[in-house]
Length: 99
Image (cartoon, rainbow, N blue to C red):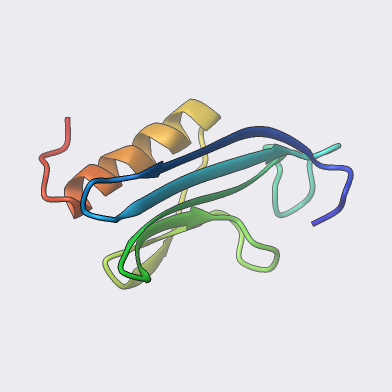
């Protein structure tokens, strides 16, 4: 990632059972063809070294998510929706109903 991107949000949390949740979001200096919304992000939830939920938009793949061993495209609408969707998937992975 270019060093000109600006870190705008970073959050980490360790649950009592040892699971890890990390959310990192950068603002790009300008939108790109793969990131027309102008953000680069990595949102991760895992337990015992195993990724259970991950949202990212790495170069060459665009916006997508990994949930329960499957990868699928993700439609980015806003930063707020991204975080809400990720947290909903984390709750489901933890066995909690979606709110």
